[in-house]
Image (cartoon, rainbow over all chains, first blue to last red; front, side):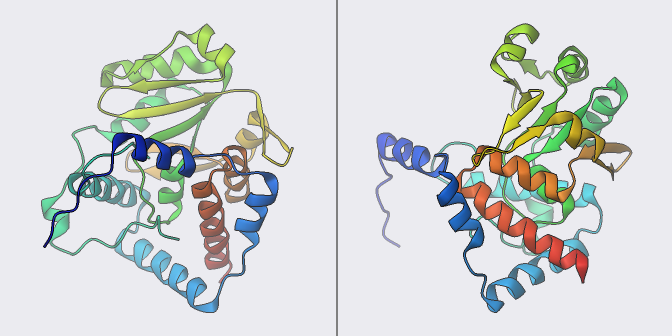
Length: 82
Length: 172
């Protein structure tokens, strides 16, 4: 597999600023009100069912979230915290 | 909804572990301190059943309870980044070491579309959740959605959509 160069720190900062910007009321409403396809709805509901069945207690879910984040950070080159 | 964490393969649970921070003991210490602290942010979504990716802990704390929370956090080597009075003035502070805990300290905040969200209202409608031996207070789903409308970042919009689906799942 070909190694791709890492983005510059300024590019990462710019992307972070963009991702963390505060939306206008109109933008937020547009996001929230965007139609949900039946496939998307079913996918999310399936994921919720899987998660709650696989990790039935809140403690299980929180432990999963910590493992999941650790796995994610172990595989990313760099970047800000969520 | 790309922020949803992918399912772990069954073998991953034995390989990848989070840091040594004892989350349940930390929640127990908060409960024992008597501080009025609401777990908000994505960690609250995880508690409710949404598998989202998150790094930090977010709490909304009653402004009178900063000292109590800081005292509860001290055994975990979590240090506040500013003093209580400064935190009250600025409306937020951070407890951190290897962990990062954002603490909102404010009587009320306003959503991006101008709705006032009062801590006391959220606290009165809070839900207590058992986390192992600890109990954690989180806002109701509708109130969590309101808190997401305060920050109003793209990921908050995504989370609102997920919370709406979670409500649907509960209605089934």
